[in-house]
Length: 241
Ligand code: GLP
Image 1 (cartoon, rainbow, N blue to C red):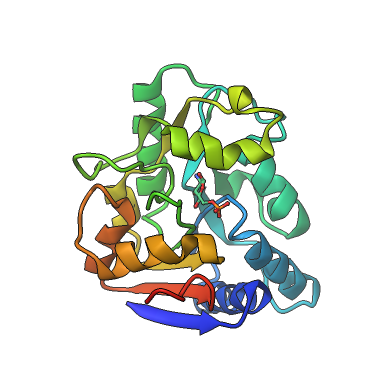
Image 2: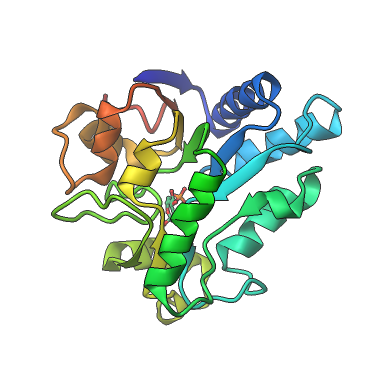
């Protein structure tokens, strides 16, 4: 695993955007696995700047997002569909038909999850997967569990995740209780992984996930087994390693 310690959130966002830009320049029709949450917002801002400066072309780039809340429509401002359009897609020259996000409005979980795995396979797999890190070690919405889930599946969100994400909703009651997420297997099949993490509140989980035992109780710990992982964090997030 490669660790880049940056002085603050801005610097880590710049670093992460440079790594993604390097991927796009090297392979203009690459498949990017994308993430939501507050951690990658700065990275997306920097990518937009690079596009606006004429340094980056998204016209052939394809994307597959990690996860989506089950039950939220695309026009709901808390859906990850909405988030991705607001924070990236609407500001760069990406073709809408090249972007993929699990469809949270599909009631039949099994069919939607199987379909999403087929979509990723039809893209030829993910070249670079961007990840954030949940306080309990979740990646995507793979919550601590007894096993590492292989493929895209429907999860029941844990109380701690609902608590952490309620800041984006009117109240905790409005946070959906379920989500569709790529599995740990889906994530581990990406050729490269880039995880962004910031803030002192993530320092404990960074130490546990990347320097502790590999266990499904800390889903991100499996990244220790991936051959090409880059972790970009600020000083605060790396303060316990
Ligand atoms: C959410 C998302 C994850 C994200 C995590 C951390 O639950 N499903 O993909 O990485 O929370 O979010 P944040 O970056 O806001 O701390």
